[in-house]
Image 1 (cartoon, rainbow, N blue to C red):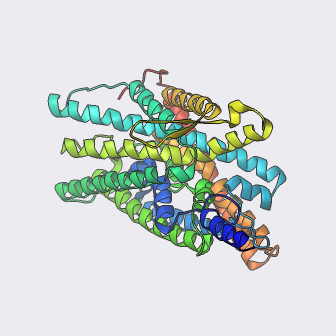
Image 2: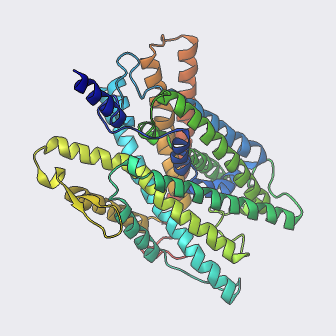
Image 3: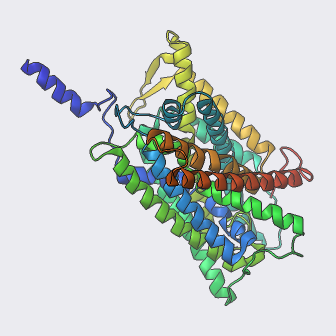
Length: 467
């Protein structure tokens, strides 16, 4: 009897209540995961987005998206555990399946995984642009600012793809905490440099650029102005998109205190930090360059000097995106591998783990199916990136696709169902109005971004993009 008690006590130190290894995450690791996911390449397009909207609408829209993201993230984090049975939902998809079920589950899966694949493509494009910017920055420094310094994006996309093939063999979220910490530090590094250069440029100009209503008619046509405003909404929505991996992050957090309390604090810290950065980077970038703000603040060459600082910032972007790519792709990897295991439970090819010793390092576990399928996935996303390297358009489309369904609709619907909120009550009506308004914003952003892609395709040659 005593042995049984000791066994139970020792196992409770090693395993959680669901029989899985003890979770070790806390407020700070969860915040690091969120910041890694949020402050990604989206921050670099914010000066351009604010330039389309102007000094009144730009900061207002940024703040509005931050509030919506925070509020719906709190709703979503209540869905990690069933309030009656305390059963955990390990992924966003599992939460939708257990609470909403049926068609909603399938629709959510389609949107989430399309968005994750799109994010992988967007990050591949952004990393290549930053690596090219380093080469061009050094070229301008050597040959002068008037030199053409044309660079092809293809070798850099391939190099990023090779790095992702290696990192993609990390089995799951719990083992990439260190990658998230490094990536979060890098995101602060390049955001701070971008902010500093923007402030320096404003001081150099001795004036604040831009206007109350954004880029003026004449610089662009009326139709272009409308499409650009819509696309700017998509860019800002993309900059806040992390809801699709919030429950996966919550599943790394230890208890007690309850996972909900930890995630509420982590979400608050992350949204406050990212919104402050976004306001500063977007607004100072716009103040520095006005209507001519580039689609990517650190690669549009509004700044030429100090060239070494630009190189550091762009290197930090690349390192950050290596980590962010993995944070975003882990839910997709887990879904495909779990599905394969359910379909072929006796297959050694899918289920067997091989231990591979690495001299001087900890031995790694290698799975043949994981190795082959993740490698194919990275190769395919790299090829698509080489075919469609339109940073701003891709960012706008991703923001539009993911924002309403993943950040607003499903968290709202799950919260209503789980808390049994009465139809047509004040709270139910308020939540539905929020969801409906965000749907209209997403639709407008999608239309604007698709119009941008159509425009870019008219002058584009596949695999021959250079800057």
